[in-house]
Image 1 (tube, rainbow, N blue to C red):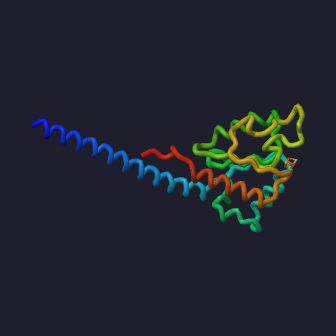
Image 2: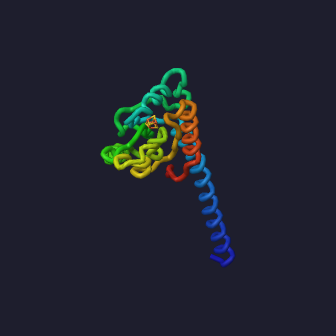
Image 3: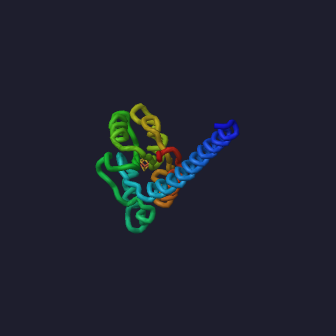
Length: 174
Ligand code: SF4
């Protein structure tokens, strides 16, 4: 094979490689968007309810606020079937290992919302028995303030989580 022909073939292979990389990147980024869209509108909630915020949590689930609009109305009572953990209320140090276990039982990808100031920071229970925020035990994606938070605030937090899910990368492999 002449030197010119060899060089020509090498250029062709390099271009082909670049094209495959470009195509792969494009397909992956579009697939990621579609998967994220599916995930953000089909959240399966697991409510970990420990205290008075539970009353407002029930209110959010009532027809008046229609959380079904956001694809999150389907609570699961096994963490193995859920991908969104709602921490609703105060977490005591005795409950912390249970919370951790529940979180570990959930499959990836999973997200966590701290509902109310107690779950977010311990609230006014700054004492020996209370964990000063659920993120001392597990990672938290969204914090919703309030004692208890209004349903509108909760829906706002849910929408923030959906935006976060929409921007996620690296969870689809081709
Ligand atoms: S934030 Fe307020 S309503 Fe919610 S669990 Fe704490 S004390 Fe109760």
